[in-house]
Length: 128
Image 1 (cartoon, rainbow, N blue to C red):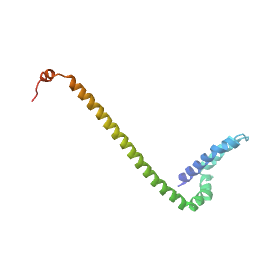
Image 2: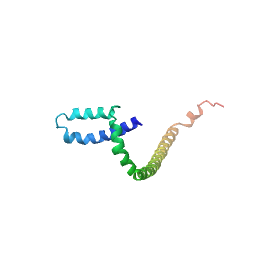
Image 3: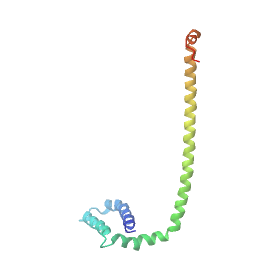
Image 4: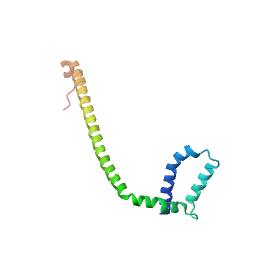
């Protein structure tokens, strides 16, 4: 549980760090403070990640739980519909390509057979 709390808080930190690096990276000792913050999060003695998770992250997730669940169900349904749509489209493309390849090869085979004379066909040994 401790590691789960750490990784969730660290992921949120990394997501916000992308924007804060652009805005406040010019402050003196910014990178040193950032490194100290990560050590504070990770340290079992300070329990920084647990503190932040229990105070901020968990209450926010608990308040938004129904919205998150609704979003996940809707996303799963849309993903399934999208997968079916692209699957059908892919199968149609594959079937069309197979039919076209068969039609072209049949025409090539017929042309090749027409080039043989009856004498050539009689000279093929009969097996059977």
